[in-house]
Image (cartoon, one colour):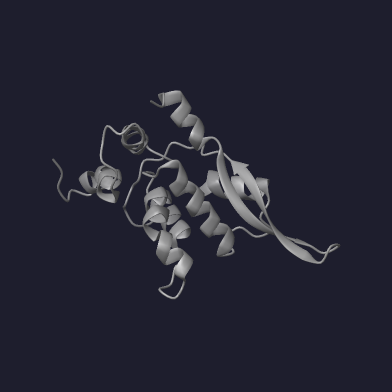
Length: 156
């Protein structure tokens, strides 16, 4: 069983792959940067709010022709809502790097992007903690339940 502190530490040790072009060796490689999710984030869906703008910034650019985004869009959107599991945030930041939202991807620039656009709220953390400890079934609907209730679209 994962303790709450150990689970929180997973959000503090997110691995984000980023391409690196070595001009001297004339080759490209992928570096993995470790960043931390540090912000509490309560989604406000009203148009023009900071949270709504962050959601748009994180999820934009994912056209139907982009297979990588399409394969991971559920996780990216869940992270953008503040409801993601640690891996969802890794995918959201990887998408930011791949789509050019983070120019010159370094540990510092990826961390800045994360600090500016991503966070987690308490129900997102608790739900994912329960899923990680097999106390709740894993599903996108379960992760997003807090958003559905907030928007007044149902619930238990």
